[in-house]
Length: 238
Image (cartoon, rainbow, N blue to C red; front, side, top):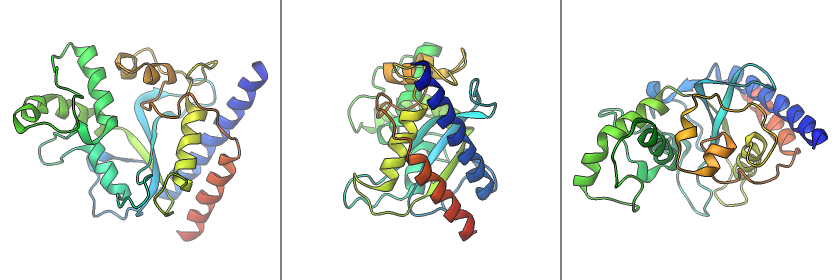
């Protein structure tokens, strides 16, 4: 077990080192509260969110990654990277949003309900809701937008074809499995004040990530080589 912990610590250090290179290539992390669709987004990619108050405690001192995601993992899907990010961001004009179109918004909302004692019985129910219910939920949607809007994030362009076997899916899955503390000796644990402790999903609480899928999987260390290659290619393109 100790050996595995050391190996994972080493791989986490390498993973965060690669993200440092990525951040440099991008000219810094962005925050969704300052982003618009007209920016120069790649068509497809994978994104890594940090949280302003969440730092690594075992493998370094930078902000830790709290959510990894991608889009267009179904064959023929046309969702672009910015479309997905804007679903997480919510509406810039009203500060509201639609948690039924973003699992990220949904789970942050459940944590805010628990932490602040809000009463939103319809939150997370059904895949669509009439205007009246959505209107009632807007104060919580705005609170969720505030939380997500200040999270620094990085993205890695990977313009492969949509589908379950995409390279993006491979890197997303393995990044989550590496970062996740689910049923493992914890590394870079969440702070005591992390909002995710209030989430109603055990997988979020136990993994230390705003992710439910892949948190219980075993990562393949080889994905780090793939990531390094992609970040290196990006460097040449700049």
